[in-house]
Length: 213
Image: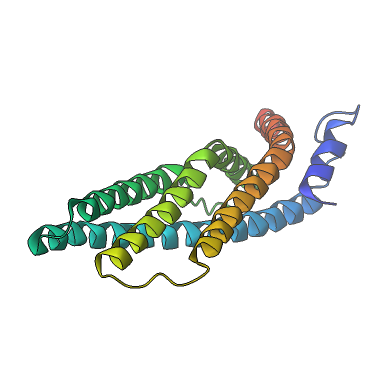
């Protein structure tokens, strides 16, 4: 049984709250859920940091490109496009930073009550992340659009011939971004009711454990 099944089974009992609760099974389920959620958070953190570092680096480079454009006396449109890219990279980096939220602290106590408390903190963090999904997607989209605009700026300012099929590649990248955004949104919407129910059950269980003490 997973953590949600155990909590629902416990909640449906008509006996005293903790009498029918299998503590050993609950510990196993809590630790399995902890490992799973940590893996998901690690993957999301790695992707976020990669995009944040990439966006910040591109923002610095676009800032240098503005100076290069002005120094060389190139048409002002390239300076404006570089400035727009810089703005998009700044927006993207800022949105990604704001979307990360505050991860739950590590508590190494091994009592059942502390394990339930840690699980509750992880659920609340996951719900907070779902509320910041718009910021995460905004950050990703801003960096992608900024990269395309800056690529156009550098190519045109250096008179590099545009390769055939560039618009198809742009459309493909845009379609992929939209697809990822909708998939992430749907996944968050599907998971939200389960997480809210789990949070409620964990709070009830934590209150029962506290009252027992």
